[in-house]
Image 1 (cartoon, rainbow, N blue to C red):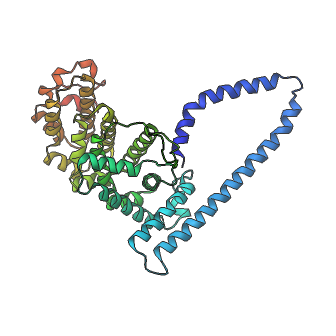
Image 2: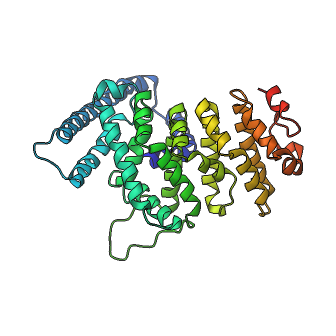
Image 3: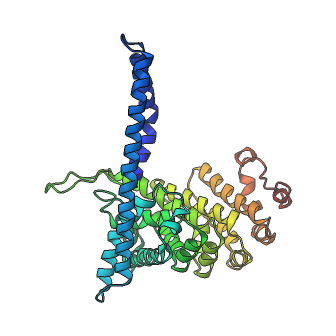
Length: 381
């Protein structure tokens, strides 16, 4: 569950490995070392690991039992609960769920926790409700700040309610298709895409100010918290969009156009990562979610013309950003051509090749993607 610690650990693994190797070599060459001594220590170390694993399994089992008990009390309360009381009880379960299932195979969810579908429904409902509450009657910048503040880690992961909601949904997205359908029905994909679009207006991340009143200080600095949020946020959306249902929900909610607008819109340098995330999500949809209904929506909404028009209006001076936009659009078109030619026809009809592609150097595009004719895409499928 401690995702940031894992990220930090990966960065330092090489140096730790090197120092460990050096220590091991020194120990092996030291006077008095012997094969017998090494062999004698091996069973002790193995027994220690086995005991540690057994203790960990016991703790996980206790957490699972507690989770089941709490959720049963949540769904069958002795006395009627207010909405706030229900939410508080659900928040209490999130760290337990993450502790139990953060290192388990995804198929263990339904086997170990039979109420996982109902649990997913409630977590999805709460996430959507909390985000809508913070976005209501706000400017785009104020809404983006409020949502990020809610979703980011605060002092610790376990005590950060919004972060625990996000982490729990990210784990649930590893489950079977029924959980994806539950999250889709609760409007989780469209809600997160709206958030992503709002994040283009986030102010630059500033360093934390020292606590003046001696209050608790976060174990992560401001940049680490934002990086962690960005990684898990996009990871969740990519998992969801690896199925066709979220793309269809985005079309029904008229939020799919936000992704096309996002990948071709200017944004401050410090928020470019969110545009890259939008591109990753859109290409995930192009590989997994282009059902007839989704293609029809993209065509009827003129999304290809929207992309071309947005790129035509760009005035900033970094050509690499424009190339990245075109690469995303071209990859989307290439994938869509396996389903239908209509979006490629839309791109050509909007003079996408004429207006911009001739301005890009040929060697700037990925191998196999050319801007001369639509047939070039089909030829490379």
